[in-house]
Amino acid sequence: KVYRLFKEWTCCQLPVPSQVIKSDTIRKRQSTGMILARIVQQMNAKSWGPLWHILPEEKETPAFEEFYRHPVMMLGINIYQTSGGHRWMGLVASLNKVCSQFYSGAKECTDSASLSVNLQNLFRDALVDFADNNEK
Image (cartoon, rainbow, N blue to C red; front, side, top):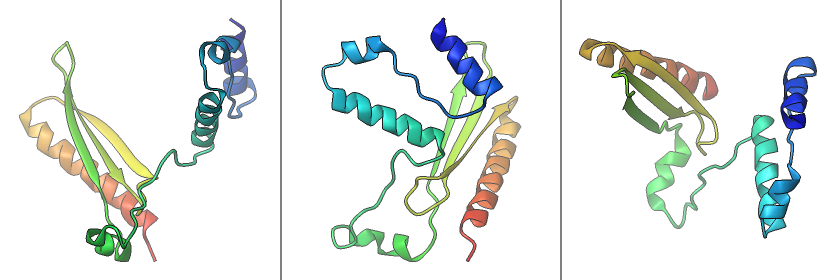
């Protein structure tokens, strides 16, 4: 109850990023270092920082030479069907070279024609965000 009230207060009354650690969490774990690492990751994410990034070594992966010279977008697309039969399409696209920033969107697909239209709209929105993030 205290946790819920505190989170409600820090979200609604005084909107600031917060991280609460329950004493049970610390008692259950054997590695304090692992707990602290996850807390720092969560705090970083709440401050709009990246949780991870891709940065291959050029000498170890020559295939990534072009990757460093020009902006590259990586895409992920998925279609999910709910138990009620509704279909949703989701698209995620990287916005920077290290894939630490991304566009994410989802649209409900009401018929087979909407699959194509939704893909076009989501991809267009991702390209606009990508262009905005990679202007020189």
